[in-house]
Length: 160
Image 1 (cartoon, helix red, strand yellow):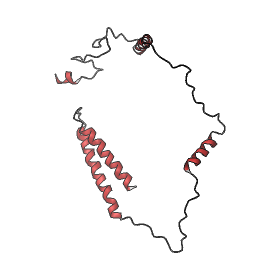
Image 2: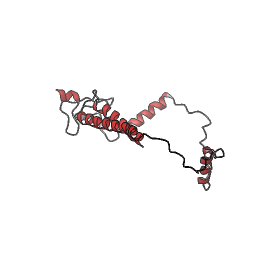
Image 3: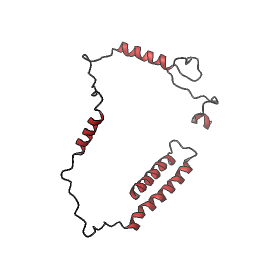
């Protein structure tokens, strides 16, 4: 149990370190993440020293206790799981595997273009993309200098 706790503290420290030191996208929470890293690292250090204090020793077998049983006749775990599977599916129809089509499906370039056009129409249904400010005809975006209140400023607009 101590090993699992120490491993969890180590992974918490590593994850927070990655978030706190993300220099590509800095944010104001970096200090909080680095503080959490220090706390998790101290926890990991404490947890890794705990087994040294306990000095785990093998248990001695009490006098008069019979020898341990050797499990040569134990069932195979795979067979046990398969038997349980059969028991659980006893009242169900066996699962059907899908049959592949007789002829392979091939798309012509015209069919692909028609599907792409239909996808775009359904994706943007109800939106007036052609008349929306800062949206290009290919659905690209142009960051505006003064964004609307619902849109956060981009890094280019924020640095200006």
